[in-house]
Length: 294
Image 1: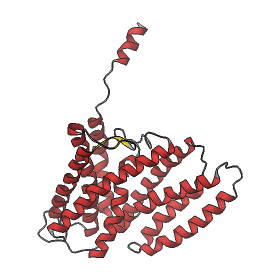
Image 2: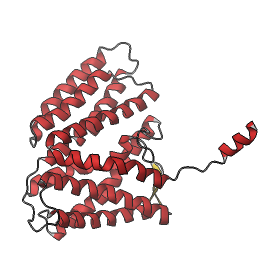
Image 3: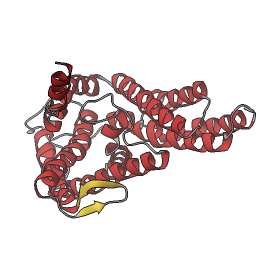
Image 4: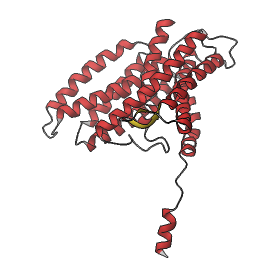
């Protein structure tokens, strides 16, 4: 009887990865939209939570390589980066003193920790994690503060321009990524970067590229964003390029640390870092482009 039970368990069907992704996203999407829409403060809270989760995944991966960063300081450093973006929203100069002081203090801590066998490696990886996650992601707070006129004839009205720009940035990147996923599953044959991410294909990337452009045109029209068609297409194309590059960058980091997935908090997606890696490059680039153009 025991053997029959074991055999039945072995033959149990694997969960559908697409269904897993959808079931994970559906309950979280309304919460995400509400926090992004509500206020700059709610966006800051979202960024802080996401940063802490991502950092816990990075530090957990570092532990696999026997690296032991002084965690209390790094979480304080991350909180200071997010807090500086929230306190002086729109003023990127506030990052400079936080990064300078954080770099100096963290290196002093690394030098004075005799129990750490690889203090400089731990320090370098941890500092890179600060710049990679909370620093880049904090630009989402700055993006929420952007004020540009919206077309009054837009189909979606009554929202702030900052929220509209955030939706444009996240939608073009994530929906482009989704198009790449399904295109790759259906038609993918040619590996894009086999050493970093064997499952990514050129066919999927092309599908994601055009998916990002179509999404950009759709969102810009819905919210009445003040862009010409050519600028909209260019920004959509940028999302279609930066999204996959951000994804590959995270894959490279995981390979350096010797882990397959950053975490498992999001079934079907992996860890939090696996989910936001594609937007980490796009969010700051969009903020600087928008502030330069408008």
